[in-house]
Image (cartoon, rainbow, N blue to C red; front, side, top):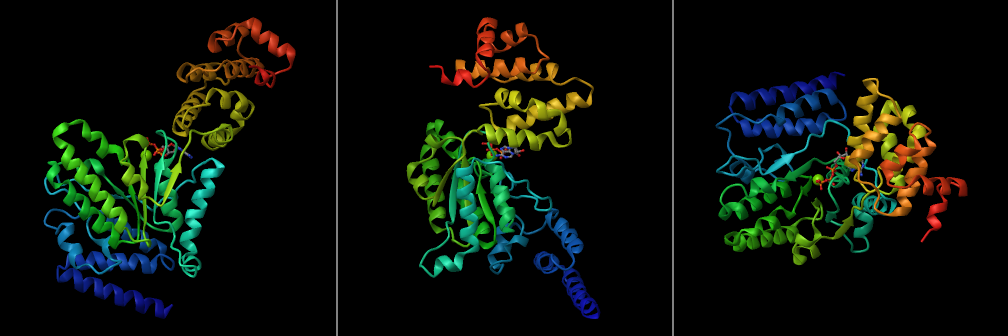
Length: 387
Ligand SMILES: Nc1ncnc2c1ncn2[C@@H]1O[C@H](COP(=O)(O)OP(=O)(O)OP(=O)(O)O)[C@@H](O)[C@H]1O
Ligand SMILES: [Mg+2]
C-alpha cells in the first residue's frame, strides 16, 4: 500500500511539474503512459485519464506533424490526430475503447479466418521460428451492413489495441493536391502507435474518379496507398473495407495479405441475430423464429437489427405479435424472389394461425390453392423438392 502511494505521488509530482512548465505535449505523453501503467492496477484512474486525453485541446495546441516529429516510437497515441490544414478536419478518428465491443455474428468460414488472423498475432514467435510473419493487412469486402466495420472494431478490441479509422472524405476534403500529403501524415501517425488502422470505405477514392480532372491526382493517391500498404509494419494491423470490389485497383487489391469476403447472412446467422437483438423480449420472439428467419432472409444484419428493434418498440407500445408486427415487417422487406421460398414463407405465416389465409396469400403472392396443396402434402419441407 505504501509502495503504491509512493508510486502515485511520484507520478503526481511529475505531472504537476510538466503542467506548470506548460509542456502540454509532454503532459499528454505522460498521461498516456499513466493510462497504460494504471490500467490493470487502478482502472478507474486509467479510464478517467483516458477520457481527458480524448478531449481535443483548444486552439494553440501544436498540430500533429509538429508534435509527432519528436515523439518517440510507441508514444504517438498521445499526440493529437493529424488534420487537413485547410478544413481542420481530423484525418484519423480514434474509436472509443471504453465500451465492450459486441462480437460480430459471422458465417463459420469467415469466422475461422478471423480467428486465425487473431491467433497469428498472438503466436508471432512461433511463426518467426519458421521464418514467417503474421498477416499484417486484410481487406473486407461485402455488401453494406454485414458487419465489416463492426468486425474491425472487434478485432482491435480482441487485440487490446485502439482502432484508428482513416477518414478518406477528410483526406480528400480540401483541394486534391494535398491529399497525398494528408494520407502520408495519417499513415505516419498510425505507424507510430500500436493500433489497428482501418481504411473504411476505401472505394471512396475510386468513386471520385468520375470527375475527369481529378483522375491523375486520384491515381497518385492510390499509388500512395499502395506504397503505404507495402511499408506497413507487420507489428501493426491494417484493415480496409469496401462494398465495391470492382472499384478497387487490382494492384492495390493484391497488396493485402488477406481478402475476407463478408456474405449476406444465412439462416443460422439471422437466427442468432434475432436472438441477440430481441434481448429481453426474447420470449416473445421464440415462437416466431421460423417465420422471422424466412421474412428476413436476404437482408443484412444491420437491417435485421433495425427490423427487430422496431418490432420491440411496437411491443413496448402495446402492439401485438405476431399479426400486426409481422405484417408491418413484410411490407418493408422484399418478397422472396423465388417461388420455393415464397411458398415456404406462406406456409410458415399460415402456421402462426394469426393471419388469415387470404392475407397470407396477398402478402406472399402464393395462391390459397397452392398453399392448401402444400399444407396437405406435408409442410414446408415439401416445396424444396420442387423444380
Ligand atoms: N455480422 C454482424 N454481427 C452483429 N451485428 C451486425 C453484423 N452486421 C451488422 N450488424 C449490426 O449492424 C450495424 C452496422 O454494421 P457495420 O457498420 O459493421 O456494417 P458494414 O458492413 O461496415 O456496412 P457498410 O459497408 O455500410 O459500412 C452494426 O453496428 C451491428 O449493430
Ligand atoms: Mg462499414
